Image (tube, rainbow, N blue to C red; front, side, top):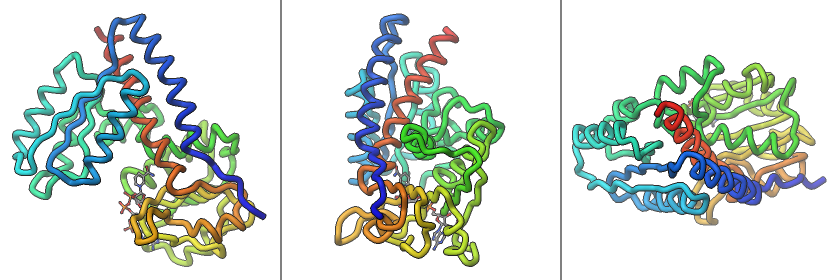
Length: 287
Ligand code: NDP
């Protein structure tokens, strides 16, 4: 058996086309161009590429993006004062602070300083709290990308056993909450580095989502035949970019599988655009 590929790249392109139409309509109705402020501190090459890609995506759908590039030695208070300015700037609808920040900066404090209505990454405690209560304004991009990938490929979630491996605040934890909410209705097991007998647990999954950051960690014997396998991991190795799932072996067992690259990553990027348009809509309703 060979698994069906869940093509995130193709799906992301389709969603960007839909979004471009929505942005055009919104701009025509409100005379407002949705605008994202991206804040990049320091000169980490990977962050540079991420921000460049995010801005390119914005341009493709008609969202304006403004880059605030700050030197690595920027102080906490300088960064906070930029965020305070962006918070009250009515031309700016979404604020994205590219992580990781330099070591001397308190990331938590910076993320908490972003106005929750402009928090398009959905990392602010208010947005996390809203998510847990089932009344989110913004959904975090990677978990939202995973859910959208499943839904748009007509993969049933309700009543299914989803095993999520990895409990980070940006991927595993919020995803497990989203999938267990009323409406999504999955039965969710959340695993982490202290989980005992992990292969026994992963083999129970109808849908297995892996976000741990360990190349080729999930092997074929850890997957139930026919399961849906979503690989969030992105690992740079000598052999190039690989996921957390041993793709070659697992694709012989799974029913569906995401490739790396070209699976969850492109959808994560699209969700930022969706959140920026939502932020612009929220702001135009309040003005
Ligand atoms: P973190 O490093 O923040 O968290 C890793 C999680 O994996 C932790 O919860 C950790 O457990 C768990 N873990 C580590 N080793 C094991 C193990 N042997 N068995 C079970 N659980 C384990 O990672 P992120 O969530 O930020 O990222 C995970 C991966 O996803 C990375 O490769 C990252 O690059 C990628 N990523 C991809 C995105 C995309 O758009 N496709 C977006 C974001 C991330 P514990 O909590 O016990 O330490």
